[in-house]
Length: 364
View 1 (tube, rainbow, N blue to C red):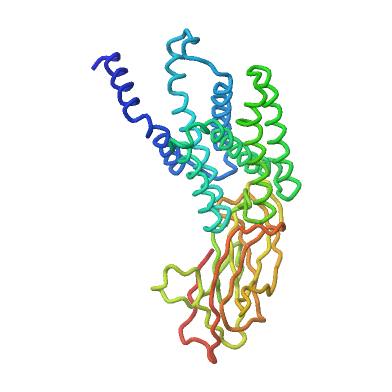
View 2: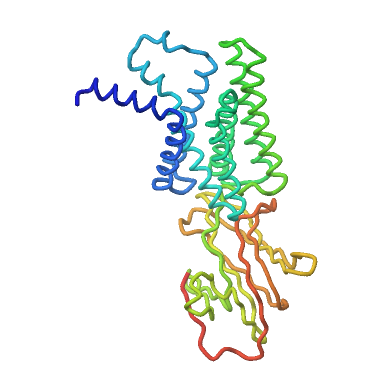
C-alpha cells in the first residue's frame, strides 16, 4: 500500500467514524497517562502537562480566529488543521486523566469519583447532537478547568506550601490569564458578544465553581496524597523505621491493621499513616477522630501532625488514643483548611482479657 492510498483510507475511516473519534482520542489520552504518569512533583509531568495545556489553548485560539482550511497554503498545515479537533481531544484526555488521577490520589474515593464523572460527562455532552452548537463553550470551560487544575498542582509544588492564600492566588492568576486572552481574541476576532458568551463567561463560571467547591471543602487537597493509613495496637519507632503491631486475622487481607479492634484493658488505639508531599513541602495535617452516635459522627479529637515532603513512600507519622468507647469510629486525615486527604473506619469492641497469640509485627 503506497502513501496516497493510505491517506485515502485514513480519510475515509475518519469520515466514517467521525462521531466517535473525539471520544476515542480522549480514551487514548486517559490510558496513556495511567501507564506513564508519575508523582505530582515530577519535572517531566509539569513540563508535559504544560505542553498539552498550551496546545489546547492554541487550538482554542484558532477556533475563535475563524480560520478556514482554504486560507492555508501549506499542505502539512492543512492536514494538521483538519485533525485539530482530534489533537485537541487527545491533549484534553491526557490533561483530564492526569488531573483526575491526582485528584483520586489526593482525596477520598467519593470526591475523586465525582470529579471523574463530571470530567467524562462534560466531554460526552460535547458529542451529543443537542449540544453540538455549544461545543466551543464546553471546550472553553474544559480548558479553564485544566488550567486551574494545573495551577493548583504546580504552584504549591514550586512554593512548598498550601493554604487559602495559595489557592485563591491560583484562581486569581487563572482569571487574569482569561481576561488577557479575552482582550487578545477581541483584537483579532472583534465580536465582543460572541466572545463573552463562548469564552469569558464559561471560564469565569468554572473559576466560581472551583471557589465554591473549595469553600464547601469537597475539593481534593492537591498536592498532598495519602499512601497508607492503618489501625494498630502498638507502634514503636526503631532506627528510623516504624514497627506496627496488630492482631488482624490473616484472612482479613483487605483490612489495614486492626480495623476490628478488640480493646483489652489498658490498650491504646494507634493510627499510622504515610502521606505523600512534594519535595521541599512543609506543613501541618490533622488526624480527626470521629465517633458514630445516634445523631451522626461527632468529633472526639483533632490531633496535629507536622509533615515534610520529599519521601517517595510518603511522610510517616502516627497518633494514638487512650480515652475511647465501644462502637464505630473513623479517623480522617485533613489539612489545616479542613480538606480531606483520606480516611479509615474501624470498630472498637472491648474484651476482658489479652489475646493469647502474640501480635504480628510489621516494619513500615
